[in-house]
Length: 239
Ligand SMILES: [Zn+2]
Image 1 (cartoon, rainbow, N blue to C red):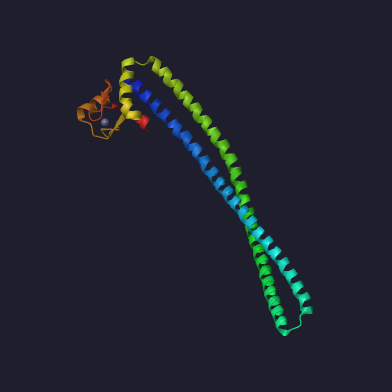
Image 2: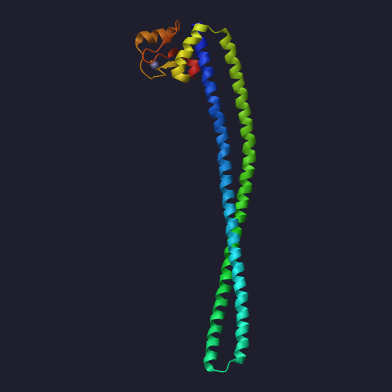
């Protein structure tokens, strides 16, 4: 195979893998992000449960104050009943007493209802706190795995950069310029294999003459349709 073509294939493969490193790192970070998001969502739920519990407790307090007021009222009604002289007054007091008693019953029921509600919410709070702890432990584990993976990716990236710069030093300047020009628009597909007699960049079928030149690999051949550099992929490389 033409030596320049060999260099171009190598260079293009280095460039392709260099482009892949950043998405790989992003992918690793995204794994962690989903767990962090879940933890944040649980924290938000915990905060609103706290607020709801506070609200329920303050309602309970209000009912208790009201209850005390009603009891005082009952006591004063009972004192007044000793002093009434007419039946009309007596009936009015009795009515007042009945209303106060009903209100006491209602306040007691309300306190009971609020206590049950608080109990349910506190149970829910415990569950949420447990799942937050679980999530935070997962985050710790994943953080370690992600850090290791990113370190490994960075090591690989450095190796590829080194290999690439070694290759660049000995590469022909004109060939390199030629490659860079194609790369400007073709990005990572400046050098592409031919598969089933088709360019693997634009996927158009190439004519027999160009195809036989590609197979010979004596010259640098470009795709007649798109202008990318073509090469015949060896069996071993395909496997
Ligand atoms: Zn093409």
